[in-house]
Image (cartoon, rainbow, N blue to C red; front, side):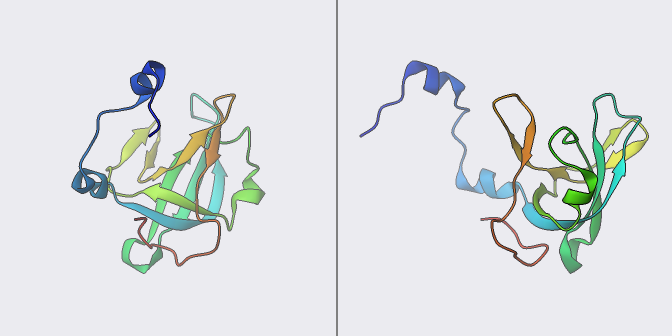
Length: 124
């Protein structure tokens, strides 16, 4: 059995139940439009994401301009948390949280399916 070091344990969050995990509704969507967001404090894109017929089109602010050109994002599928509520970011309302992981320099690397899946399907 693999034992964790104290440093690894310190970086882990508290254990949650499976029901708590399932409370976060993560869906896949396709980016259909990318707009500049000059009013943002940190460089960001305004994303329009098609999350399928049940959820529809939602907007999200994403601080990913250093790794992703606008044209390269259109058509890309991404994972989004859709039930966290809206958040106002300056004049923009972000309706979903587009998910990613930090690289070694803290830049956001988007996450999504490795193969195409229908928009709106839920992660499990």
